[in-house]
Length: 484
Image 1 (tube, rainbow, N blue to C red):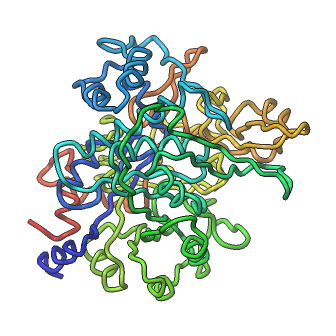
Image 2: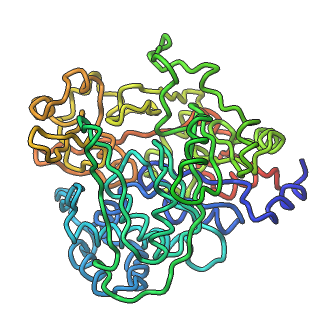
């Protein structure tokens, strides 16, 4: 397929390439901005942006980008409070721990609400700054409690697309329409042990937080990230607002994978086995009349042509962008793992146990990673970030919070099953370490990285031309579009 044909498709107001929302902070504003400036859909990760902003300010805000964006926030005193709380000129000392950020609950305190709204505004503002391209933000439905505040902050910055997977984000389109008018919105909370008559929701009224008349916000397009036809049908028929399209993601994609349909079986390496039931019927997807993109090992020009021939508008690509110069993955990790691919040693393991969510999670093998710690004994168990905590109903009807990665006795005391803790890892702290923001714990333990990538990881050496040790996001796009 010629570049001319590909570019003609772009005139239909759809991107050909969607850059995946990568981990926590890996798909940073710089990466999304670079992709967007090339006419494609750059996407920032919305996961844990409150924590990332707080820690980045404590490292000194190199380049002053965060403060520049915060000065554009519509409530200056709110942004100033966040800045004054966390900013450390020149950055904190290596032997100092990061200041704590409150964990989310059904009723987060006002400061955490402010921090989350501002953080999402900052990330999207920087990604959109200085150009006219489109920018999206990616969220996980499984991380329930921050999502309302995150969505509103992204919309304040004029985000163009919202993408969400890892669950059934049926209520999100309606929330977006509600927030466009700064009205109160709510989301159902999934509570373990809840009875059929129980209703638990988390609510956010922007007017109580902002207390200022603001103009109506732009309504972003919503793309549901799905792995099955039933999920697509549920969103299509039962979403509370408009669904603008789908990203169809297979189990070869990085990060969280949908569990196999039916009973879980493992291969000889201990990975989940996927079969015919896990393949999405694209013909039935096409009948819904909505645009879709295909993700999961579609990161080549040949696979892009195949996707378009199957009726897709294009592809979503994550892994190739995750190791580009513009991503926020630490430079040391990039170099170690890229050199592994050069030597033909790249290995990705789909771990059925690692994630506290219960979803399979793809892990890249590397030294000095929590993925290398047999039985996870080396790391003292602690849950101090809490993004993946499970919400459960206590005997008195109130809500409690527990995580299979927290101290085992604590988890059992809260009613958790001892079997749940086997093989679980602290994704929250591992993902922070990936982007150079590891916590120094009180006992002196420095959190180790936990890197995720899709099956395309083993092909990254192709981007290292003429002995170079790195490549750019522009190289990836040119490769995908078969441009010089």
